[in-house]
Image 1 (cartoon, rainbow, N blue to C red):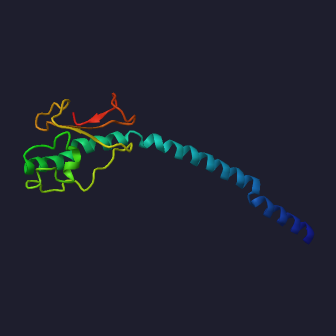
Image 2 (cartoon, helix red, strand yellow):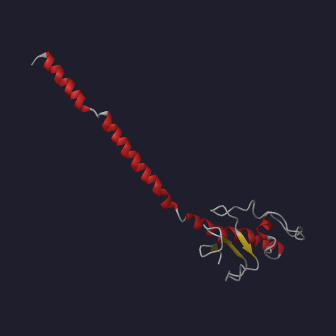
Image 3 (cartoon, rainbow, N blue to C red):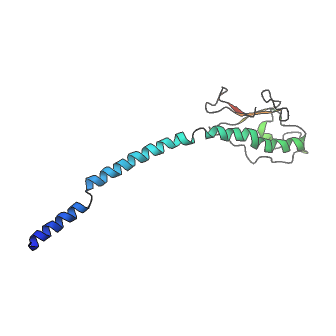
Length: 149
């Protein structure tokens, strides 16, 4: 075997041992397609969590603010006073008000304000006596409303 033959075989082995540019581009394209599909499905994995967040707020977070308010002031805020009574003393109740009971009133997961009514008309729990709810994803009164009832 001559040196020239040996060099040709070595050159062929080197050329065969790596990936071509086309092969690398195909693999990158496949990875990009798979990543796009996976990221697109993340919305499906996390969907429905907004309902849980809104439900927790109207059933638990508001209770932790409204119960101390009621103990200090003597009753829940009226519908007209609304949930802002938890952040600023309503007129005529400044002496009893020991808040702020909430630092700020957050919006529901869809960007709408939470609704409040006292006395409540839907809440069957007599201990609460108030209705608190989110209009849900459509932002209007419908079957998808999330409330404390």
